[in-house]
Amino acid sequence: MQLYQTNELKIYNSITGEKEVFKPITEGYVGMYVCGPTVYSNVHLGNVRTFMSFDLVFRYLKHLGYKVRYVRNITDAGHLENDADSGEDRIAKKARLEQIEPMEVVQKYTVDFHNTLNKFNNLPPSIEPTATGHIIEQIEVIKEIIENGFAYVVNGSVYFDVLKFNETNEYGKLSKRKVEDLIHNTRETAGQSEKKNPQDFALWKKAEPQHIMRWPSPWGDGFPGWHLECTTMSTKYLGEHFDIHGGGMDLKFPHHECEIAQAEASTGQSPVNYWMHANLLTLNGKKMAKSTGNNILPNEIFTGNNDILDKPYSPSVTRFFMLQANYRSILDFSNDALLASEKGFNRLMEAINNLDGLKTASTSSFDAQAWKDRCYEAMNDDFNSPILIAHLFDAVKQINLIKEDKATITKEDLNILKGTMHAFVFDVLGLQDERNTQDTSSDKLGGTIELLIQLRAEARANKDFATSDKIRDELAALGVQLKDGKDGTTFSLS
Ligand SMILES: [Zn+2]
Image (cartoon, rainbow, N blue to C red; front, side, top):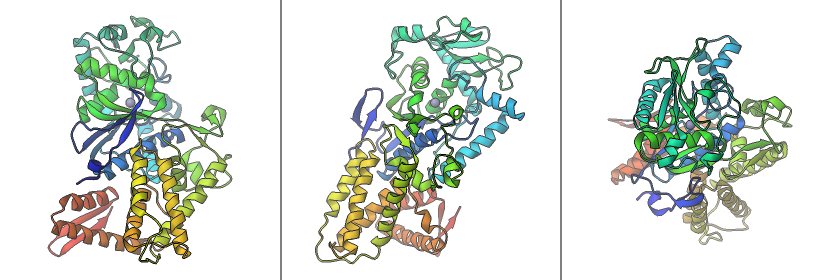
């Protein structure tokens, strides 16, 4: 029995505007695509929040026992400055300014992106495809859209015919916009005048002679439009119809709207069952922007080297702060909020450390099972992490009372409490007790892994292969490889 069989998970679906019961296309499996970064600068804290929100979704789906294929792309070509069809390619521009190759820009900021998300303890996706690695596939999708009559070729570029598409399909259904009201580009530029209608968007752009990032195509040398890569790579790795598509709120239009149109125009079917959008992060009540100086980079939080915070904060405290808001609410980052989160985080970690020393009694003054159910209810309600955290603090209060002999707990209830606290705090919320990682960590870690190896052996002896596989896979995801040999199981750390 897997947890997903007894938990009814509801997801807020952006396309219907309602919380819906989650039913995957194939029982037990989830396909999830999330729009990744355009790697032309250091990862923005707002983007970190988006990726952390989907890390929470990924972790909870895995916790429920689903086998999740999580695909998150790297945009390394085709994303122009103004998000539409004009302006310079963001990566090519950075390469020109820094006088390096575009792929050096891509490498530098992909490494930064991975390092930053690792610090925040985000799990890596199952597949991380790049736009430049899928040029051939993107050209194939364009050919299909042209064949189906929804795109046209002008002077070496290919444009999606929005009005034609809207005759048989509905363009604007995700962002709730009407085609008549849509004008993609406000500025008239050279490329735009080629379009039949201003609503149309580029699938392939002809490369001007000075454009460095170019590939051959049936229409001449050029590069793919930004929206196309996500349609191509999501359907390549998850199928023409998959479960969840996520991204930042700012991607709803035009990016995700165009993705839906491209997929429907090429395959004839709607690609996604559940659309999820993570909300913005503001800084001191205002939009974050490099140009106004109202901006902070993740590393500046950890080092304290910034004008916004009084002192440095660790990645786990920052993560805890972000998860204290629902992913669909706007969250404001400020010195006071971080300070309060740090206090809360320390209280939580201390309570977890105190769990081991608690005395048990013949009766409980705390209904651990009812509390555990409430924790699941919170997460089943569209991944409501702030409510979950409120329940975790109810437990913190109980742990402190029991420690002071003002409350009692039975052995069974203590086991439920321990197991649930560990599962939600470390596995689902992905927090780490950074205060313990330096000194005694290696002994504790070794002991913990030995215990898990023992539990896995017991599960296998009982033919409970779901549990034994779960232990092996979850450890592997954390970088602990188990090796079964003649003399038992050994482990190695990567
Ligand atoms: Zn995308």
